[in-house]
Image 1 (cartoon, rainbow, N blue to C red):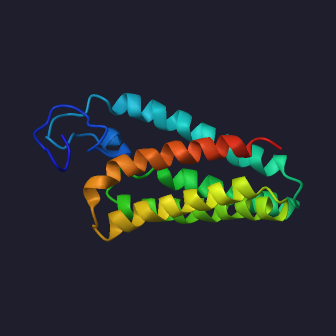
Image 2 (tube, one colour; image 1 turned 90 degrees about the vertical axis):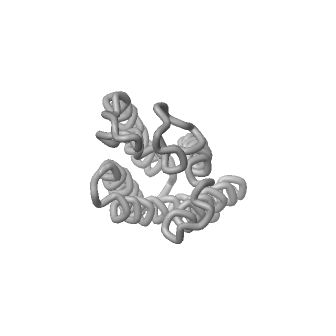
Length: 167
């Protein structure tokens, strides 16, 4: 089920959120049989993100202080994302977004300094997409668009992270 169609018996790419997959119960009240798969997927996503923060920090000729800030902010973002299926969902989303934006901002600053304009600009677009997700969610604006926008933003940012692994 979903917020739009609670009695539905399947996951909808266009109506469900990522955190719906991690819930114990589906929106229709039945046990979420997909939860174990979602936990495994979340685990691999977290390993990938943590590795990305570490490798990105090591790929740029920056100070150890800058590298440590990037690793810490990125790691905190990833850590808080693990708790989005709890009753403190909104708090953990806000913390994950805050630390994630700080980490992305740091990476963008290196791209600006090194005249890597396309990565700087695409990082700025990614930050805007993340902020748009938050705007729709926290201010309850056109929330029906949010599940799809969330997945588009995930895919966009994963590609951007991959591009940042190059020196």
